[in-house]
Length: 260
Image (cartoon, rainbow, N blue to C red):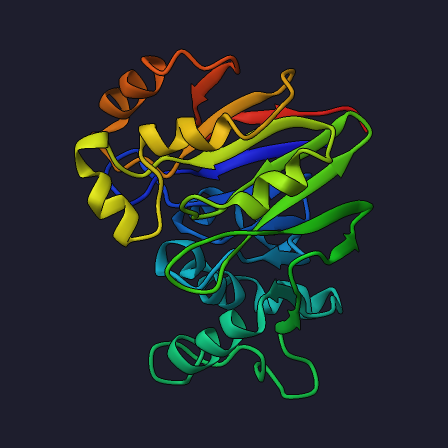
């Protein structure tokens, strides 16, 4: 299994892309601005998009990807790209994005009978089998309905928490997994802990408290969703925690490989 980090920033700036991961060649997890770094051929190969929640930095490339690949997928007689998300997330996308005002409704285009996008509802605890992968829907605690994902391989699980504040339910499940790598957000510095709490995010202090819930070692921790210009400050505060897990800042363009 190969996971390519297309974007991992909490916002945009030169060299920064918002959240998206490409699993092997045909599955996206989230669809932030990082999707724009794919070639047109790579975009056309995407058959599934798993969305963590409805915030713009995680969904804005769904409609743009659909517009870009419509003709190529139609020429190849490819089925709709399936967008997997919570019912509340699907409702938000239909109402606020793919509504014919902000962007065309590609669940009805190029034709109602053969659209380029289709929605599939998921729930926490579901395990969806796509493209030879088992993708488990995990709990997240954010300001809108949200989830994380575990992608299972023979070597263990790669987990992306999505945007989340403190979340005991997540760690109860992770303790049951053979965890290989954990991608977890830390959006703010500790001096912005009140803002982190209000907005449903972590800061280094709360990250340390969350990691302490995990009883076992043997997995790597990658930090995502740090605001542009704040990476060094946030990572310095995380390093001061002295955690028992290797902790690194995730980088756009990074490739993580796990045995099947």
